[in-house]
Length: 377
Length: 143
Ligand SMILES: [Zn+2]
Image (tube, rainbow over all chains, first blue to last red; front, side):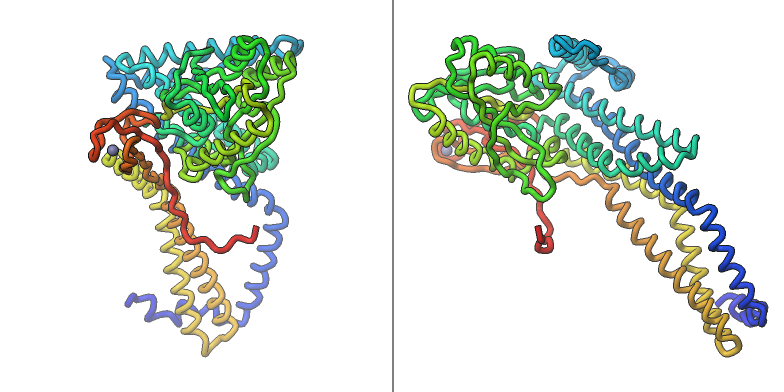
């Protein structure tokens, strides 16, 4: 085959010596000594390598996200010039939270900041995509926000990776390596969210909105609060005010504001409030499981939750929550069949709560929380 | 949408290939060296049993290492490919219940009024959009 094989006995000659065993012994000890003194360092390099692999994947995901965002803007928005530069500028936007040293009244300051941010983003998207309608603007804004989140995750991980490499501090590298699986899961979730937003597909988080949409379908709706609609629906002999964000564009609306307005309109004469929302499941629980409880099941920065709680306290209104369980990935990727089918189960539960907790002729509020992308009413 | 998804997988594959080419060379060199070591051990066994044993050990370790790395890489390439599960849209007739399931198109949304029903000419509506996950047959879970 090859010449080395022919002369193998010559090549192997040194190994045939009696001294060979001694050499192997020395090598063996050397191996141990190296590991005693440099074991930690070797471990560190292995960890760094692992982080580097994840970072590479994060970079890929983030660039893919940016590409999808730009392509979608070009396709829907029909801009005159290339939107890439504008998108890149958008991806670096930030919003600073208000000072919390004196926390009184911070909710309203935070709400203001979030409103300004939202308006700013929408204006920016309108400039990027002049041909898009209101629904598409909302979807594009959500797409870009997912791209922004991916960009941020990538930059933070890169920061700690470079810092770890520079300082060679085991603790910096170890912390990063330990939380990396969770970070990667979140990044993958954002990546699939980005695709869903770009196409306008309903996501798992929208299950609350879907339940509300099913309840209010065929009844007259009116706008209430920002990006929210309400329908007055006769249900089991009671009057239900069903609230959801206005679809089918990507929107969460201001459900807290809407509920507060309805409570005020009725002078506090509301028998009960039922909030329907998606909730994070624990590992081991099945996606699409429905559970009941009490409390204001509204996620996000807490502004909307706060508003409802204020009104509840003022009029002493009891509050019920119906949640549909899903994991982080399901919450932001296109809605799974199991979760979609849980909507009917949730409606059944709502009806039972109504029968048990209210009398005929009462008024009540049912609020479907969540991003209503891909769900009309 | 179909051509776009294939395009995405295309770029993924090239990226994965670029990263792995160097590692691939290393793996194959290791593989070749371990095979040579195994051959050596066979060759010198009659003259020095101890040395042959060492070569056998080195050969097997090299073989195991390279095949493990090869498997690991295959897994990684599979992971790099972004899976796009099909999203289905369900269109239902309110009157006769005629159901039509097709792939999602941009602009679809739940409760969207669509054209007329094939059977009774009443307007139809989208009643559902979801992603179906084909679960592989998993082992019976304990918890
Ligand atoms: Zn029909």
